[in-house]
Image 1 (cartoon, rainbow, N blue to C red):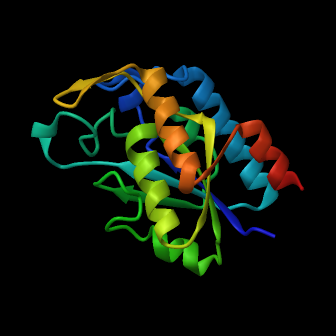
Image 2 (image 1 turned 30 degrees about the vertical axis):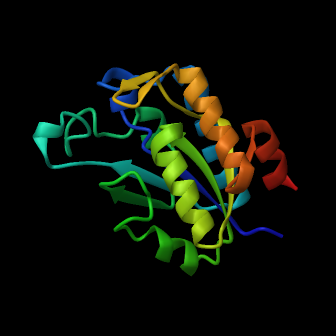
Length: 186
């Protein structure tokens, strides 16, 4: 039987009323599913690990530590958690205690929720898989937004779906929150 932990990545105000509003799936839907997963995990004795991104560099313009945008969304802040881990890069394992927390708890499977699908969720999933952990991504409890940069452009739905398809090829078992809730209740 899997020994799971639920990782909730960067569900911060920046993605709701800040510079990076999540669009796909709609943030109200993903936020509701993240909350459901957190409550079910706590009830089932699955450790809940909340990860928060921050920077001290005001020139970056986003996730400035101690700002409103940096704070956890109130729906996440009000729910129980076992650990709060601060990070400064997309990977939740990079320069954090996450690896030790999981190892100390005997975790062999991580379920990942949060933002953004194509960035911190994707990076954290790959890091977990490279560490030998089984990975589950809750596809309706993550989200992203449209992008346009020197690499081209992609709509939010397209980017979300493509990232999850790539994850499902090798790194993660991609499933819905409802399907994951069924797993932890068994």
